[in-house]
Length: 144
Ligand code: SF4
Image (cartoon, rainbow, N blue to C red; front, side, top):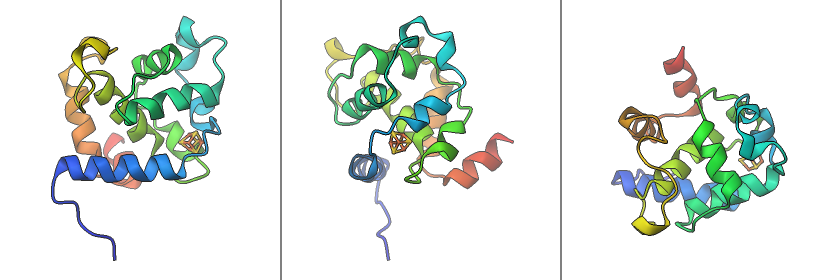
């Protein structure tokens, strides 16, 4: 039986460790994203490299410019969730990446890449916290 996280941070750490151990960097989540066409910074992006950059953020290491561009355009379509062959909640991966790029997980302020404005508004952060408590099925039901 899996243990119940005792805190939000523990939950996030568990999610990050699980994602890092299972993600193959295939890039299918990125390819499924309907928003990438709206970012000039993603026109020639290699999907696996973009995901690698997001995973860097999950380890509190600044990711590449392409990963930041993807973090900026996410609108929570959730198509990335269904696209992942490993069953990873890729939307949550992006959300945690946003949190890290904003400095919420320990990245020093001078190395952050997103401001609250970039992440649209404070409520995205609220959503991120809510999503950490929900399964992919619950998120889909909630968004409907
Ligand atoms: S689709 Fe899944 S396994 Fe592939 S890069 Fe995205 S999160 Fe990783």
